[in-house]
Length: 167
Image 1 (cartoon, helix red, strand yellow):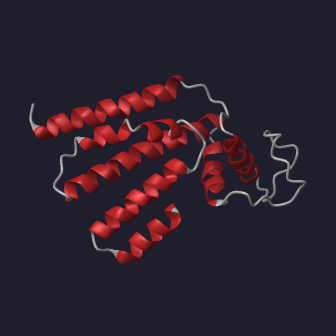
Image 2 (tube, rainbow, N blue to C red; image 1 turned 45 degrees about the vertical axis):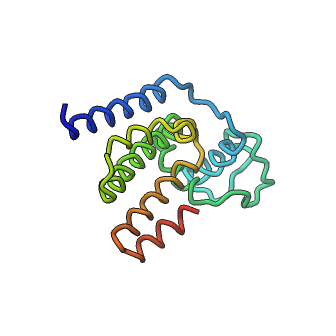
């Protein structure tokens, strides 16, 4: 098998592993931070800036004030996913992980390294875990990789934009 076919095979296999795990993982809040993100996202998805006690995540006790424990960008992204149902809030990170792997492969190619390492990226335990949650970590990795790719292309403005939002 030639190098390109091997790369495509490994990348496809990694994608199947991530998507397969996502398909069997129950949709459940397992980290406290997920409840806060989802509570704020639910408010945004229903046209409100501030979560109320009527939102489906009761441990988000804000006393009807804007809750600033977490940045609001990720709940805005989650709000769009929630429009498709709660399951998409948890599947979104799996899709972002796949997009991150594609960007990683582009980075590898720019450095003249084998893109087959993209397969290993998909099996990295932290990414594998966070791609199954409603946490913001996977989006941070994606934006970081986009920033690094822009640095490789010597596009400083775009690199600063992506790296700034990654943090």
